[in-house]
Length: 249
Image (cartoon, rainbow, N blue to C red):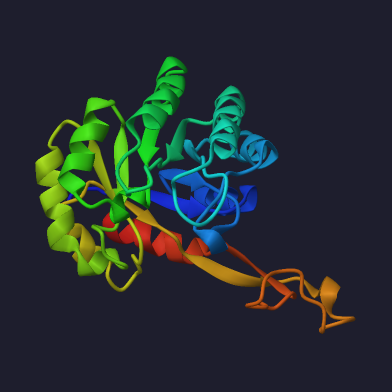
């Protein structure tokens, strides 16, 4: 098996540092992974870049719940894009769709140009997994000179769509990179790599860490109605990243 570049999905600067220690090749930096990843703070980007030498791809997503943003939310994206690029992001990760679920060419073009003018990479994220015609989307994104596409092959779990991923890679050719991600584990990573023929993979592996500062009142919750435990948080599982990297890298 050829060497596979391993990108790790991170939700904090601490995640980036753990991924770096474990041998990751590149990271995607977000906030709020519970909602699929939202725009990170500039502070988390600055610390991640200061403490590691990893390429950091910064998420550009102003809210959860779809990818057709209001004009106000899109203006926030533009401001965040400029701030993230100015403060060391190695690329931007984003996905803009129209109300009918197709690639929003104008919004995508504008952000892509911001990154390209700064000499940085661009990634169209898993918004592509809900478009009605992925070949049309790949053609459009290649036309806009997007660096790569993060995709699960339009399936909930990439391991269930390895045939689609391979087709996407073949269809994209040298025009645009295809980055498979979603549901990759130590158990299936070799199969996904083999069956897709991918040269890079996107993984998210976390472990729970304890924070005992809330134990005095366990009836208090600060989140939504799902009420996750308030005495723990998620951190990149360095051992899992290290094992995955040793398997495919």
